[in-house]
Image (cartoon, rainbow, N blue to C red; front, side, top):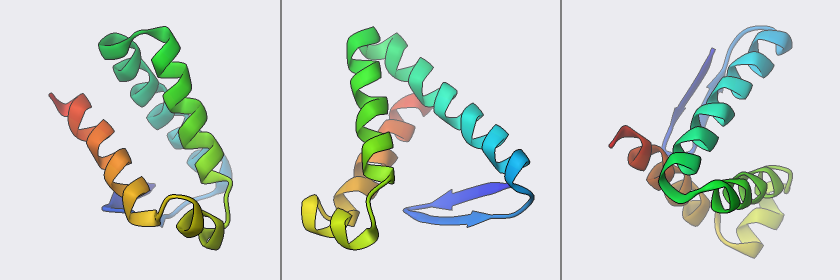
Amino acid sequence: MIKANKGIVELKGNISVLKGELGSIIRYIYNAELEEHGEEQAKEEMKFIFEKSLLRREELEKEVGIETIARAIADIVNTMKG
């Protein structure tokens, strides 16, 4: 199970299930971006999210601030909700 609220994430279950759920989330976000902004921007958004997710917390805070990332992701999710 993946549960997230304003940047706070709770994970439960084995890694295989979590990977499957994460893949579903990524696919949903990508398809929403694709529909709203087209393929090029959708791919850029996914690349941005992936690259930032690999940074250590300290690196992320230095580069853009963790609150900025959380707001950007929340904006993407809210856009998908319509």
